[in-house]
Image 1: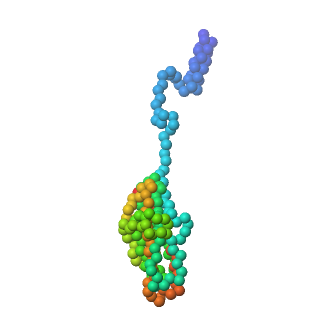
Image 2: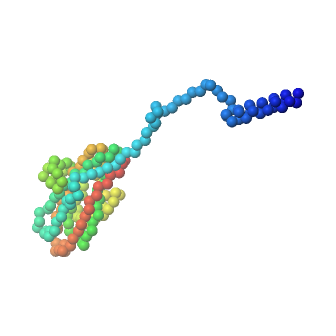
Image 3: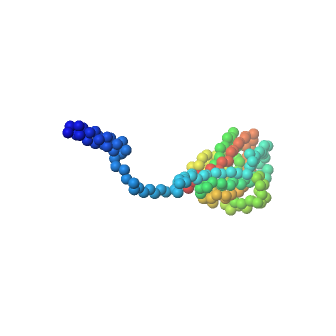
Length: 189
């Protein structure tokens, strides 16, 4: 009798161990569902991307300016290739020995049928800035920059800008110099 009890207990112990190792009871029924049809869900971030048509060239390289010189113009086209709608601001970096207060700067936005630098096909829709270069010098970043009135920009849109500069008639401008870099920055809405 004791042998039978030991055999029974040993068998129960083996069954208990098998149940423990295999995770308990086993069922032949199951069901599963999934989302993504085996290809998986996808996530892709949008883009913000501006380009211009200057090919690395300067809009202006003027030396020996005279107050009697006719105002000079140069045009540039900026194109938005981002996938997200964006606001665009224009600002700059000005380095000067004091002539910036004597240089008149007018910036207009519109359309053009001509290439970089050539304003013969430019048609203005709005004046963005009309003051001295020293006034533009305060526009140093996105926050203080000029807001493009045609925002928001969408994929493939272009804007032409006409820059007009002239030197005021004052002897205080003699021998002074200035350099300026114009920057357009887009930020998604």
